[in-house]
Image 1 (cartoon, helix red, strand yellow):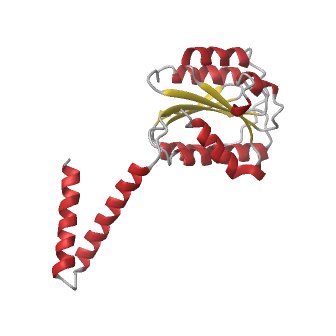
Image 2 (spheres, helix red, strand yellow):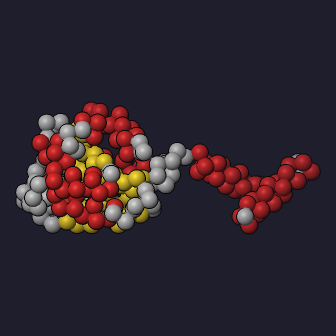
Length: 226
């Protein structure tokens, strides 16, 4: 309330200068310009579409090529940027390989998440566990009982640890009534990702540099389809 009153007071001062003075001072110009920018920022924020979901990302840290790692990292970063243009989104991320590595905890600070996502290094672990990333994300999202939840798994389809990903995914879907969206780093005929999505073709996307922008829009829309 105090912030709104201050903004309207500044607008009134600007209106006074505009009406009575043809030659405003430099300080007045700076003040009025800043006030206009504040109002535009507030209006833009109010116009952002809502996406009230909590999303946990599983990032593949296994035996990927450097090209796959770069494409995965860039798409993850750009997907977070796309989600940052929606309101009420919360995100978390884990990188899975021989062991899980938390990239960032559940947060609504997407600027920080984008910074971390932009600097994920090449690891190239010999082992990778899609199953353990599902369990890890489930443990995070189980505290979001009043919100819609999603998982997004990036994978080349390799699962060498942790049991059946399909069973882990079914436990999550039954408990949380949440979707798992799979981003394949190989092709659509990815057995592991078919298992974790219960063969729901709407939730399987192939990361293809030739279809990058449409894919970004489609995954964003699918995540916010609550």
